[in-house]
Length: 215
Ligand code: URA
Image 1 (cartoon, helix red, strand yellow):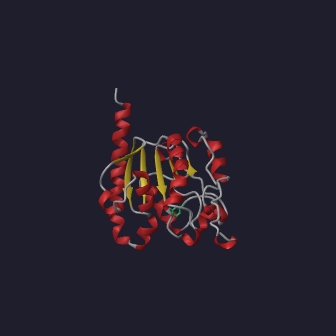
Image 2 (cartoon, rainbow, N blue to C red):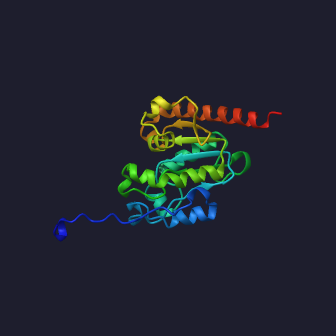
Image 3 (tube, rainbow, N blue to C red):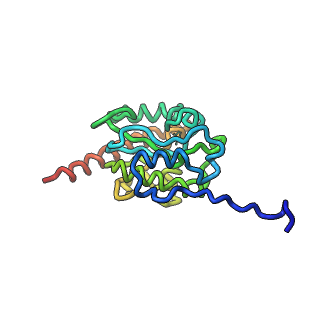
């Protein structure tokens, strides 16, 4: 086979071994240096996560957009403002501690170019980082926002509309499925459904706290 026709060997870009045993500093450093998929070539910053690492609530979104890529923090654009308002409505915030604490992360730690949808191989490469974040935070409840978060956590291709209103599990943690804030900005008529999802999350978190404090 001549030069130009020869298949280009795929570069050996692998995740660091041992992600499942990493502590926070090691995990954050692994993400910052990750070259496991092509998104590392176009990113400005990796977007690791924000909030209290001992939070009992965890919010999981899709992937960084332009603002998040520039600032290195999840949900800082207009969708982030709506997320902050939603959290405020249930007494939580990204900077809160104790009963207000919330940890926010995305399925992908790097921005897909032009905000295109994440590719399955990108999700597969990045998923162990999120899995380790969940294992370290050990939240009482996970709010999964949008199709990519939901489908990746629950390993399903069912649409959000079919998965809402039930309590799912990821690593044994209750997962409540809801719409992505960017979708809600485009479809404000579904905000009432998102409010119902937040109420289900509140009830589910309260029930799991009652169980863990029962004599
Ligand atoms: N959308 C997401 O899912 N995550 C972000 O961090 C920003 C927008």
